[in-house]
Each structure stands twice: as C-alpha cells, then as structure tokens.
Amino acid sequence: MAARVIKDDQPRVYFDCNKCPAFCCSIYERVVVTKRDINRLAKHFGLSFEEARDRYTTQFEDERVLKRVKDAIFERTCTFLDQKTRGCTIYHARPAVCRSYPGRSRCAYYDVLRFERVQQGDESVVPQITITFREVEEEVVDNAEGPEPIYEWGEREE
Figure 1 (cartoon, rainbow, N blue to C red):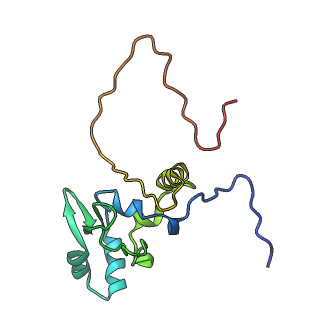
Figure 2: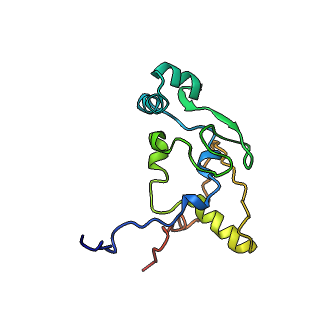
Figure 3: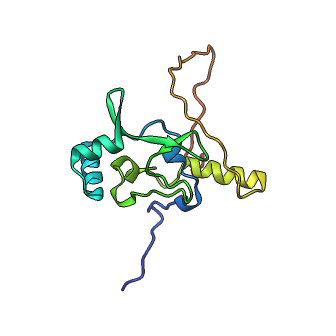
C-alpha cells in the first residue's frame, strides 16, 4: 500500500469530537430532519417511517426536528446523545445535518473549549455557551473607514 501523501492545500481537521461535551448536540434548539433522515432512523430501529417520525421527531414551527431531553450539562440536548459518554447513540443513522457538521476543518466550539481549558489550567472546565437568534439593526457610523478585516485561522495580512 502506498504511503498517504498530505499536500498543503488539503484541509486538516483541528478538533476531536471525543474530547468535547457535545456542544453541537446541545446548544442548538433544534436539529432539522428530512424525510430521508427519518427513513434512516426507521431502518436503524426496525420501525415504519410513521413510527420513527412520531417517536423521535416533533414539529417546530415549519420544520420537523429531533426531540430533545433534559441534559446533565446543558439545559437540553438531542434525545440520541449518551449523557455519560457524550457520544451519539445513532452515529451511523444520524441526520444529514449532523453528518456534515461542522463543515470545515475547525469547530468553533472545540476551539472555545480548548482555549478555556488552557486559560483556566483545568481540563475539566466546560464553558457554557448559548446561541441566541435575534434581529439586529445595522448602525451606520459617519466618517468610518469601513469594516475591520476578517481573517480565517492561519491567514496573514500581506
């Protein structure tokens, strides 16, 4: 077997889900599921589509979402999170949104976790993160020179 070659332009993963308390399963108020996701759950549990939909999902406004339960660390979490191991109990049947998360080589929540643990000098620290969705009006400031540049991790201004 040929040795694996990593080129500089290939994305690298800078997080370890096994060392995280499952922020992504807990801090979002909903995990949207599609018909395909419900079919995957039904097959995984040996149920009909309707049984899986009724047992594991609920309607949230105009979306079908996974049910949530009270959590030991955060307020509520996905019903399929093992609260002791903080791992997914349906990993191979998880919804598409979970499969694609975080969609990049870094996870912001893992970065915050690592930062706080280093800052506090305590590997057991779990920062409490809350996401609040709200409308914000943009304020125009006279004589402003424009927005501050935004850099991705590892980018440098030239």
